[in-house]
Amino acid sequence: MTTANRMWGLDAPKMRIDAAHLVFGGEGTVDIPLPAHVIEHERGLVLFDTGMNPIVNEDPRLLFGDRPEADWIISSPEKRLDTQLGMLGYSTSDITHVVLSHTHCDHSGGLYMFPQATFYIGQGEFDWGRAPDEKSAHLFAPDDFLSANVQSFNWTTVTSAGLDIFGDGSMQIVHLPGHTPGSLGLLTRLPSQNVLLTGDAAHVRENLEWEKADPSDWDYGQAEASIRKILQVAEDEDARIWIPHEPKDWDAFGGVRVEVS
Ligand SMILES: [Zn+2]
Image (spheres, rainbow, N blue to C red):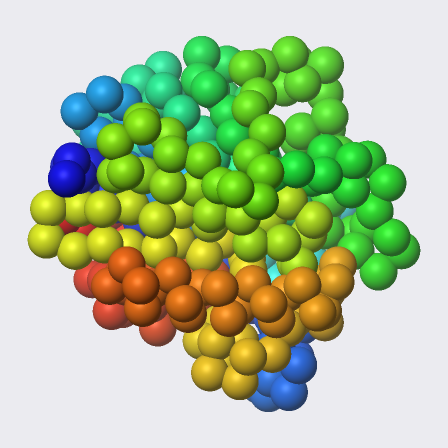
């Protein structure tokens, strides 16, 4: 079976957040990374998520104004996504495919940087982003994904059947609804291991250990079904799970810009 070549998790701003916002029953605070991952395949360079709008790295107030989130962000200029790609020897124009796990502002802020790419989004995600409920409206920056520019990009909708990006089994998008209607994960086969990026279908390990949703989830029943699907896919495919917001998983995979292959 064909594999992708290698993967990196990129350095990114962090958010200091109450764990109770990430999983029912969570306690204490946790500094969660707000990252993008990049995967090199012989036929393209794939980005999974795009982080927050890069202006947050200059000053969180440029993005959040007086909102409390401005005080929760830990950022610095070198954490810009384009700068991080440059540290690996790539430029934004090298990205051929972007998988957007969902439209929340900590994932969709850099979409505008990749006009040449093919984009993947889950079914129902744009509709939800246009008209979210009161509970989750603060999680969106609508211009990230509803601007005429970004909407004009080459978007492909991923349904519950999932999608095989290169048709060779090496990179499969997995539909994981519940956090939002169109939440997506990505299963990547690498030369020595398989890795399942969960997107925000899990935020921290406790979501998986307790099979518990996140209070901000769109649909708790579907979120918990997707948590069970993550565990099942990992078992069936012998895949390591990487939860992008979970600091412990970054330790397990070796940290930022460490090659995973
Ligand atoms: Zn997130």
